[in-house]
Length: 147
Image 1 (cartoon, rainbow, N blue to C red):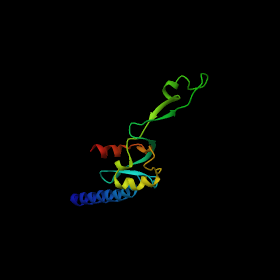
Image 2: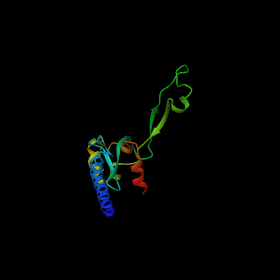
Image 3: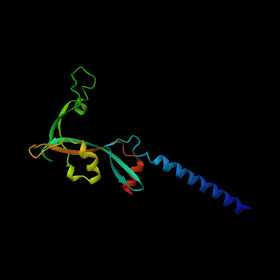
Image 4: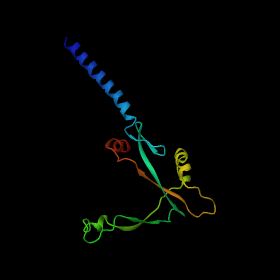
């Protein structure tokens, strides 16, 4: 009698696990990219995971040709935030991408290539890219990368 109850309990637990895995598989399809866009760049992870990135390009002559940009807000002395402006205030900085279209895998080139500005041999500036995560890294993604 005890063995029969134990077998029934194990069968119930197994069926719950299987049904929860199938429900998880349906949710997992959009877990890494809940709002997909046509020009998303996806880096595959173990266990059918992925990390999704957005590309940013800067027109530059090469990887050492930085572009000057303005960051932050120029607080005046009476405004709230003036005392913190050394951390988050207005400043000038430099930025550049480290990747050209030729550096990328073929499937990424197919997605990004048509969207970049066209340059010819006489133009010294070409799109240099960097990638930024579309979403925050989740604990699950971190575990997949570190395993």
